[in-house]
Length: 138
Image (cartoon, rainbow, N blue to C red; front, side):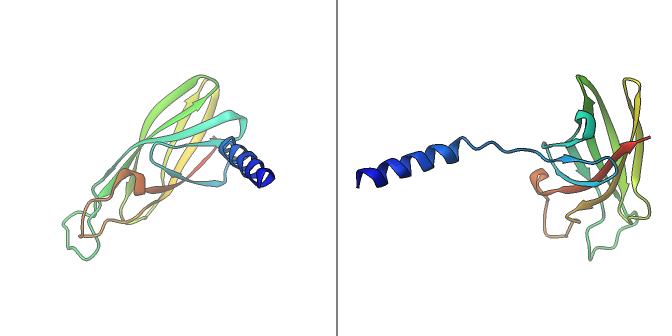
């Protein structure tokens, strides 16, 4: 019994000390990011969603304007950070893109999709959004 108790204790300690490692994404590959979490690309380039403002017309509702979603981001590398906003149109007609300069390097940031799409049943919480984006050298 004593051996089982010690084994369980060691297993518990090992589980609590496990660190979560954020995978490093290759430039040009898509990253699915959520509100207030940081994704990391090569060369220590990090992207973080700091806010989302969604004014897209909900499904099954007739609107005069299709709407858009504004995604507030921070791109950083080696202590240099740049805040910016990308506006993604509701009709997905084209990705939202912006060139961001950090130091001497330029990066192209592109949003390909923002989910979930609003329904007429209520508000979407920030933590429930998933933004598909890409960062690559410009």
